[in-house]
Image 1 (tube, helix red, strand yellow):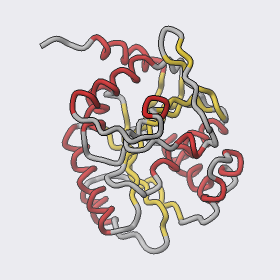
Image 2 (cartoon, rainbow, N blue to C red):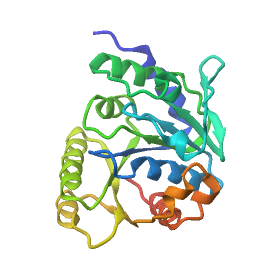
Image 3 (cartoon, helix red, strand yellow):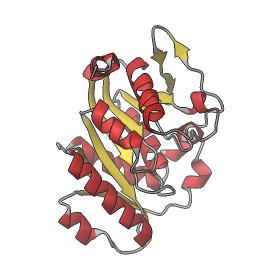
Image 4 (cartoon, rainbow, N blue to C red):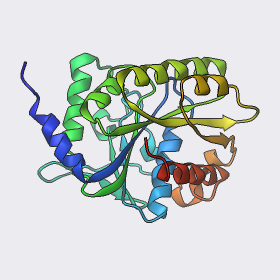
Amino acid sequence: MSIDARLSIIDKRLNSVRRVIAVVSGKGGVGKTLVSSVLALTMAKEGLSVGLLDFDFTGSSCHIVYGLDEIRIVEDKGLIPLETSGVKFMSIEPFTKGSPLELRGFDVSNIVLEIMANTHWGGLDFLVIDMPPSLKEELLDLRRFVGKAEYLVVYTPSKLVINMAFRLITLLNGSGASVLGVVENMVRGGLIFGEKVERLNVKLLARIPFDADVEKAIGKPKRLLETKFASAIFRLYETIKQTNT
């Protein structure tokens, strides 16, 4: 069985990236994209060199959070990320044209390999990857192709969502992935995932209160950074900075 040459290229591309944070969830609608996008903005505001890769095949939307109507990919012996609000930004969006990609198996793996192997990130302190909400091929591909990735699991305090988060964490643990911790988003009441977190030996890194002002700030990065949501993300960043998995 031949080894795909792109794997060694990915290793070289990421050699100068200190940490890779993959933001994942078992279900959609938990605010994973906002967590990814605002986390990258926060890191950039703190003076770090940071990249954001929107890998959500089901419906990329980080560009909407950043207020980008169009993403122009520059090619120069590979793909050059767009710089916006201090973040090096690459998205699946230009390749999907706003439509979800109904891909399976080899096709998914091939796209993941192509984008990871061809994107010139340069030196980064952090690369944040917004992953699709799933337990499917993309997640397993990233585990295989980017061994240094650390996984941040986002969920909301809903029994249905928590069940999927539990399955996702179990899958990641079983694959030997480095699970950075979990983020409980849109919190309105008490913690209802605590016992399972303890049982899986996973760190609860942040509980982010529901913030009605976030919706009005989407598309306006500076205004986003002034929200209570962003304040909670800053505390999450401080925790991540001090965490070694």
